[in-house]
Image 1: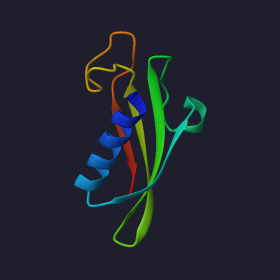
Image 2: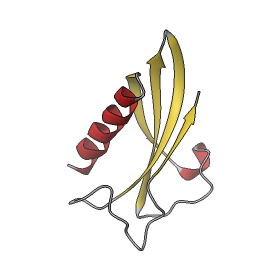
Image 3: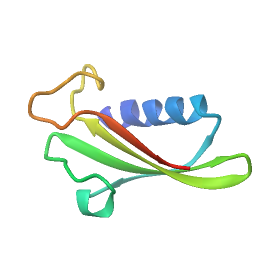
Length: 84
């Protein structure tokens, strides 16, 4: 359920940036450009296409099931990094 909510959010944000999602993978902190994360976060690596070019985005999400945008005091805040 949480994965589906996060994936819906990823598709929504990439579409807003006029891109098309190619792949979504959950990764560890060490595999990402984030310097902070903990057990209350998930990190996703997103490959997407925009204007016939491929890009990477990173999404640090929270694990709050009823509201993925809420501020969990145990988690690092939701954040995006775009490599365009």
